[in-house]
Length: 261
Image (cartoon, rainbow, N blue to C red):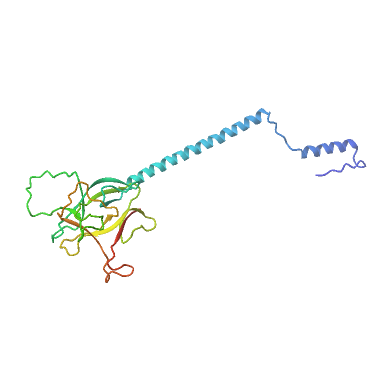
């Protein structure tokens, strides 16, 4: 509120008192840093903030530890497996080797043949049984890259070479799929390896299956380079008709890729 210090209304002394009161009302309060009570109040405040920060850090550290455990557990529950045909090793940085061996399966001309390809380990263990072997059984043979020339899709001079394989386990992914007629994976999937689609020869009696042979296929180290036959790996080509062309093309070899997610 404003007061008039008109000397005709108030005596000079009264005017001075009013001015002093006005000055006291409008004066800014000043805090002296040398005031021990103020310093103590600030120290107490800082200690409270420090305790709050320590509690926050402890809570976040606990959350980080929990997330790390979840990540480890997710890696442990991950582990989609697949066979890498034509190679004795697994893709680096993405998978771990379960075991390596060589491809095997049924004889290409047997009408009672099993269709599945097998990746046979190189260190077999045998049944402890008293049953004597007889001829009323299934059979397993080795596998060869095959063609009607000296070369195959699986490497120069690869005809009649034995086929290695590796069983691989993903270290970060829970699913795997072999996609025929693709060299790359669809969005959201990671490529493990790619190559050429393979099966048995269509004119043979035995049923076979489609598998993906690595684009950098190798012969089995120490394998025999001779025509023992057994399970045969040949390339697969497209035949138009019931197969839609386009997008497929007559007599083109089919690619393949193994993808993980």
